[in-house]
Length: 445
Length: 12
Image (tube, rainbow over all chains, first blue to last red; front, side, top):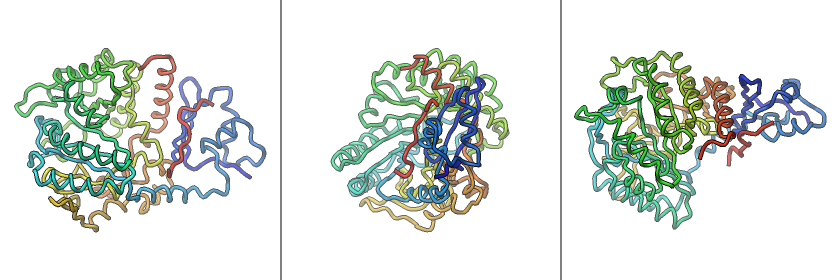
């Protein structure tokens, strides 16, 4: 048996001279100390190994960094990609309202439709009642608009989901993207009872910075209310995760480190609160041309510089970053055949970032629970990944994203939608290692 | 080698 390095490996060196290894097909990540480094680098040479393996080489095999020479790795990736097309796993993004109490400067939504209509709520409950018995797993993402303006709708639909998933032994997980303005401790308790355990809340800087960008519809400030809620929620004993998303551009970039100092005062060491930095984009809103977005190169660097700063201050990096490195972990929900966005008026979409695109309006949910879907439009979203792109097929990151990190970007531009994590894989691996060190030192909940 | 994250069964 001859062993050769996997085509899905990536490698980084830390400042301390450690070697970090990663394989995107198994998701394994390993740190090699100075003393073992020479042996590992030798084992990973393209010439391969055709003798008995040493203990460290055996570990490289177990992690997938070394594979048997006769393994067809491209076929492995192809099979993994096909497994996305299972119909017993479903992801629904539900918009209980499309209204919002905020008017953020970079928002791309138009808030034309308000709260979910009664016939849509009833139709969705019927659809779920009929569909859940055929599933093994259901993920629901509550989105909007601002979903907390329709908490009663969330509770009504969640009651059906929880009852049905329990009855049929279906695993269930739910997350929510909220501006956080109404996320009081009592509301949080109600959401946890609805089994919503992961939240994304955006803070774009300290008070003066945030309050110039993320304002109420009447232009009022929002920072102190949101931060107050997060600190209240922190006193709960339950387990949950809150991604604190920080959207940066040329306007607020320089002031984010000061903000992270402030965040660290409250949340350092509490792993439930996690940092997620992303560049502001021209996402389709009315202010697009006036937004001081960073150029791509600056954005790619700053995402990880700011994250590193946060980790050094004791904040946790969003677990979404690490999960993006798992096999299929960076595939967008819009690229999966069994994933749908349910609008407040019953319109069915694939993508949450392009509600006005005709090719994104793929169907309708009716009051009797039937969902009409235009299969040609659906096919557009679920067949435009690695299968049509030779560069994706040859990429080390293929098992993680499958050319499908953002089908919308590919449809609009024709370009490859590589995830930020892939573009700066060495920095990401160093940050994962750095975070593991912080935790090994006994900090953290 | 320190394993930060073990190998998964990708398709499963």
